[in-house]
Length: 230
Image (spheres, rainbow, N blue to C red):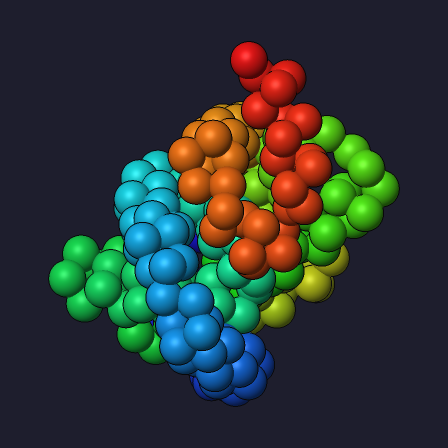
């Protein structure tokens, strides 16, 4: 997913900076408000950021200019929403670009949009839809995290196809990029969804009061989940 430094030509790397900017600005506003009003969530916020950093650092080669890996953004998106997760993603991607040569500064806007914004938006929508429909909580978290991972790579394929349409045009290039990613990303997404569902189950049992204060789950649902696990 990390598009490497200098790989995107102008004007595409500038365009993705501009597209990502409003989400990050709003995410900073939400993050400041969260820290002021609910400081008890700081440890969980740190866990969500650490998840993004650790999982997105486990890169596998896919093709020249990019790579495959879990994203870890599903947990943050479910707990804090997509814009705050975008800020966490930005911090992680800057660190990885500067100190690990993973990604790049000129491609930062594109990488932030695919991993920190687009994927988390899908995770947040899936979680909200699942909880309102009364679906199993852990299955919903699994689906949210797995689909966030997969959608990140769909967006990366779109970004690469727009910049490098080749002789087949956008559709042909998108199909080629997405097909290469799919080989590694589908199993990685399933594994990531399972890991984040297990972490969410751990939070339900260890810190359920935070989930209630964040309006993620009502107390009655948490009680049912605990009774089912007993």
